[in-house]
Image 1 (cartoon, rainbow, N blue to C red):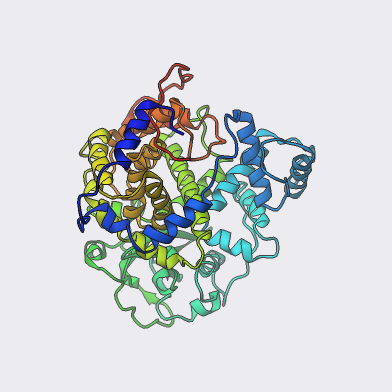
Image 2 (image 1 turned 90 degrees about the horizontal axis):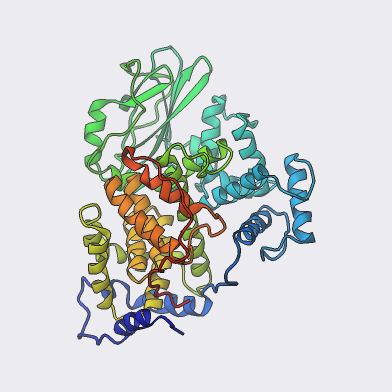
Length: 533
């Protein structure tokens, strides 16, 4: 029942808007109505949608729930995550502490809890390391030891293949964990590995081209990750690039730092698909060692298309590693770098969007993920004109037009919300940022203002949109105002200071002064919410 008269009037105007004949082909309705998204997804998600299991939980209880969810995920049974730390939860905490070598007190220290919850959030991002752990003898619980050792700078033991350096061997394992071929089969594939002396020290260096792995995890629309390992006195140093059609002449290194040669860099953006791989060469292939001392961090230069080709999944994997190495997420109290803080929260929000969308898709009978993806692919062209205006128009001006667009869809708000939830999952899972951002735009347009945070993240980090501090701050401000006004958080509700962190970090974008968090006014007027939950 809608109690807010303004909200009721807006909702009524949406539901009662008469259809104006057939929906135009470039209309949102044409993109979403019919087929799976317009039919099975809406109906089934409507029956299986997640309900809010409680109201007005305290911050402490929300934190407890998040702890219980994390314990359960790693195989320490804490029971139903109700936010009450009873006997079962204390027992689970002790099991976790024993597993990690912490004192078994049944009470978590701040570090123990932060490591547990951040490890859970990192696991939700997924990636080859998580996939490999699930197949191991200890399951996902093994990730806790792996990430603890990484934070301490300790390398886990690994056996190499055919005399390969351990760094290269570990990378082959990492790639194989997200591909159908085994590591041994990958090494037999022509073009997957190339040898050359890239830094002129007389030793073999290694190039691993993931376009030959058959795994979409490592590839964007037209380019795939290429790992270059350069020899140093301390071992082999890994350099990651995003490229296509590479050869041994594509790279040169100075000691352990490598770069893409200029001629290759200029040619790469015009290549739509990886060029046919040359025959694998035996022995050492000598390449020009033209690297220069003090070279910049390697970057596959493509200025005009960088925002569209960058892999958000790969970025979030690196952010998760950095977060774990730093002992947990950046907080208001230790906020020093707004970009790092916002990057962490971006990937955390992405993992929540993936989780909620995945749960909705899993409840759909007789509907494959491929079918969902096929229907959601119509989302991109429908919202692309609005995405093209990000950074040029204010959030309010753009949303006004998106709301007019929504009115023409002939879909209810609930149907739009369900569809956007699933298409957001489809977009982020496949690194199709146009679909993911378009879904977030629809969410904001129908009144779910906290989703504006996602648009702010894309603008601040430069994924799917041109990077712009002012535009990002505009969208962050929209989300923060809604949350401070009482809107229900959709991302990491158990992180009590998250709103203050985003507010402070976003103020620091572009060299601005970090905002000092202040308590939200109790008299703040909540923005109208059109949620049907």
